[in-house]
Picture 1: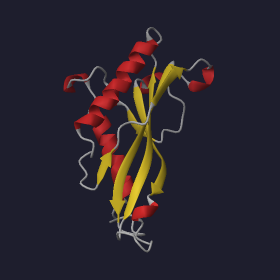
Picture 2: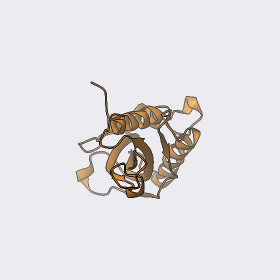
Picture 3: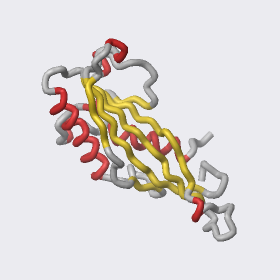
Picture 4: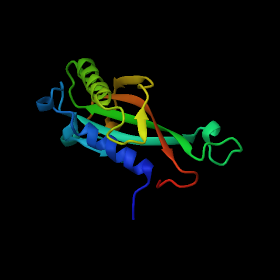
Length: 160
């Protein structure tokens, strides 16, 4: 069975993030450890790493195919969080900034992630901080990049 377009978008983001390597001209090798909806705490073997989460999907009511003035399509606004984690304790702030910059650079290279029916708006802000208690495994710093990915489906058909 085919995947939904939302699944295809998440898969395409994961594939794009896997391209973040020093060999590809980036400052970090984040692409070697990319997860989707990672459930456990970060441990040293998973760092530096990326965790991708599609946290909400809102359909624009103006272009909702079910409305009287609808365009026979649904315009989705998928909110995506890209969570970054590092185990580097010295200059953790510098490391996190490089990781954030690498994610922005990767997104700017192809805002559609290779999918004809979607595009990424510019990141909606980022956050970074220290993980100071033992509950977060071996990670010492974390950052969050928020994206909005707009994609189109047929009304009530997430597969087309």
